[in-house]
Length: 116
Length: 112
Image (cartoon, each protein chain N blue to C red):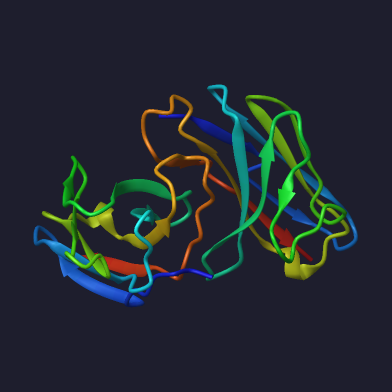
C-alpha cells in the first residue's frame, strides 16, 4: 500500500491568515486528491491535482481560496487562504493505487485545522 | 451527491458478525460498489469493492443483490477495533483515479 504523510498534523490559526498543508507519498502517483471533513461531517472533495497541470476544483471550491501545487509525482500542497472559523476542518489528501493493480485510494492521516 | 443510503448507526457484539446494509437503487450498469471505513481520527481505509458478484477478502465479504440495488458488507467476527464509520460508495470505474463521493455512512459500534 502507499504510505502518505501530511504536515502539519494539526494547527491552530488566526482568522485572516493562511496555512499550507503538505502531502508526501512514498510512491509516484499521477493523481492526488484533497478532501475536507468538517466537524461531525463526511468527506467532501475539494480538488484533484495532476502533476504538470492545474488542479480541477469541485463545485463550491475556488483556486483563490484553496490554491494547490503539484510540483512532482510524490508531493502536493494545499493552502487554505484568508482563513475564517468556518474553515476549521480536517484536510486529507489521498492518492490512487500507485501500482494500478487494485482499485482503492489511499488516504493520509489528515491535518486538523482550527481557526480562531 | 452520494448515490447511496445507509443507516446512520448500528451496534454489534464483539465476536459476532456485523452486517451493514446499503441501498443504491439508482446504480448504473458500469458502476461498482465500494466500501471504505474511517476509524476515529484516521483517514478512510479501503475495505472491498464489487460489480455484481459477491466478493470476499481478508477483511470482509460483500454481498450484492441480483438486481444490484442494494448490498451488504459483512464483517464475520467483529472486534472492538472495527468500531468506525463505514461508507458505501458507487463509482463508475474500477480505477483509482475516479473521485470518491462520500455519503454520511454508518457508524458501527462494536460492544464488548
